[in-house]
Length: 368
Ligand SMILES: Nc1ncnc2c1ncn2[C@@H]1O[C@H](COP(=O)(O)OS(=O)(=O)O)[C@@H](OP(=O)(O)O)[C@H]1O
Ligand SMILES: [Mg+2]
Ligand SMILES: [Mg+2]
Ligand SMILES: [Mg+2]
Image 1: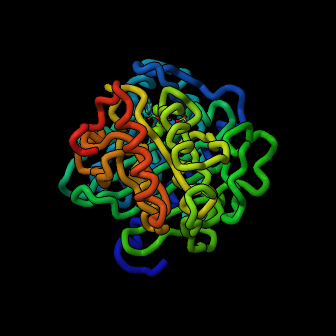
Image 2: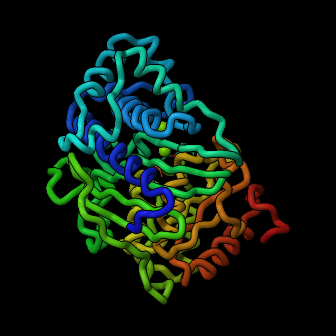
């Protein structure tokens, strides 16, 4: 990647994600992942807390005055000494095995209290002005727990626009040309051989992938979305959980498009990472709940990487995703990510299928 705008931010973001992925991989390999249920009943683990602490520590060291919007907060650790100590033991032991790279991430966290405070630096409001990092330390925690796909997602927004995006996907194949395997979202315990990819993009500079390592960054390769011209030849991916995206609507849309291949289900922004390198074409995420508002950290990195790889990402109304609205994406409903040459066709099928549903209130009728 050209060393120009945001080169330093990109470099640090990739090293920070790579270091935190060492921790998440160690936690995923153990049977005791320290799972807690949050107030919304979603899980959080030692891996989520530990990765958030390590990545924010690197951001604090390098970009002291930037805002950070991250998913996790430290309250559950303040009230739980044994879990707090477990997280701390992982955090203090995790280092890149390349000294120069590790030094770039800073001198580290002083003690457990420093770790808790650093985790809580992720409580910023976000918004449309200034530099804001957004972090999902483990996206797809359910996938992480079921030994499937998950991603460490970090992005930098400036004045509400995503400028840098990084996705660490420890369980995706290293090989960018590997076809989208129907079992990709399933059990990944059989070994880490050939797995682990780090994808990144800077606005206007293209998208790149490199093998995830435990030290210095590996050599990068340019990636691009699929060149498939006929939508009937496309494969689409979707969430595993039926509660996170509407499998029924997505199946109807695929049918309307004449897609006969079965959808590939996998957790996390590994879906964006896959289509960004041409493994599959489409990522559909249509809302199930009328009240759930999506979070910026679940989409910012993936959105930029897909767009820089030659794709388009919009909501179901065809609007670009607006990341300047704070911690949540209040201006967008549903996600349609696809290669540019197919996006209009897919969007029109999405609108036709949703428009025909009498209970579809989220998509304003006048915009369909
Ligand atoms: N109701 C509802 N609707 C839509 N999205 C929701 C919902 N509840 C949670 N979430 C967010 O979904 C994130 C995981 O998305 P995935 O695509 O990985 O889902 S799945 O695990 O494949 O089912 C997940 O991210 P993580 O918490 O980082 O795992 C949540 O932020
Ligand atoms: Mg997430
Ligand atoms: Mg998460
Ligand atoms: Mg979560």
